[in-house]
Length: 336
Image (tube, rainbow, N blue to C red):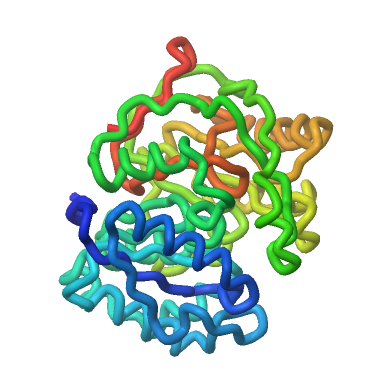
């Protein structure tokens, strides 16, 4: 059984860390907005030495970032840890982390994208349930306030401790407003109607849920930080590409999914859930669906597509290791 952290309560202290990228130093108003919102909800906030640092494509050298991760877990006043944003070099911190000490001091960890690396490492090395969900700058820093759907499922996962059936959002967005020019303070992002869940392959499955950002998970395949995927329901989501205004290239995604197939990951899973991809056109989305089906053609598990996970907004919060049910006949996605 995974260690499940205690629920979040009003008055608790939330640690804010930057374990990967250092964008809080470049767009500090996003972090300020997030902190203002969470304080308004009744939480206390604690920052660490590297929270607002920038060292090129990372917040600080890996050893410094790891020190802040450990400090947050070992801080007796802290109940939850929320990451400022993702990035691409969280993997460099892993060798500096003491997973036995983390296991002895379990806390909520929340974040998405490159935070997938830390989620998987905690799962494999500390036997700790963590939460794939909103980051401070991206979701909690939204102008003029976080999207209601995101907050609803964050509270269901971390405050109520009871998620239940997950309904698709009514509207969503992947619009980009330039943070560095503070365009995001001029208006809210435009939302468009959500067509809801799609089933690329029908069927039903029950199992513990695990997964994350496909690009980030590739860092860990075959390492000691890779959890057991047997009999699990896997979720994946697709981030931005090298050009932030576009989604990750379909050729790269095709190769990544082929790597999963070669590694035998698809052989053991019971179902696949796919988050709505970021910045794909309708044509690219249709090609992406065909890529998914092509790379899983030798398997029969159900595939649910277009879920509110990852780099589009709003998003749900997923406890990695929670019991999950999917059923195409009932159009059901449930976490219990």
